[in-house]
Length: 120
Image (cartoon, rainbow, N blue to C red; front, side, top):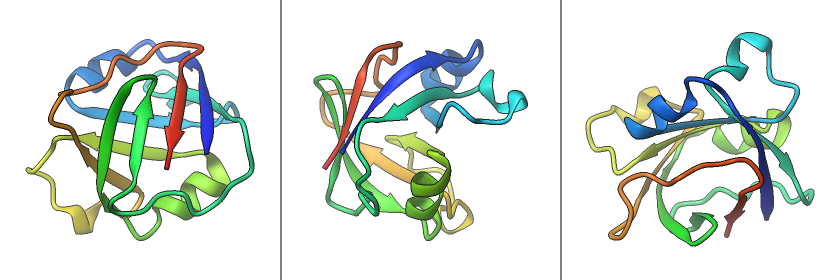
């Protein structure tokens, strides 16, 4: 499935630099828009997040290592997901709406408006 980044909140780059990307659909609550990358899904596929899958930001590809128990439901219904990049410090069981990803080429992705995100 593909989605397109349409806006990046003012403090989102700092979170990304520290290894966390928060994504929401354009209807995100106002208090969350500052920290999030707002995106618009380009198709209606559901349940796309799975261990061993991948998420790519243009040519920056990451393998999905963990999918929280609520991650697919939140992403399907709200377009919300928290993505932790190359992070081994968090207790995964405490982050049911999150996914953990890793890459041998990228530490964190460069995120910008009009960027395509592909989940396979």
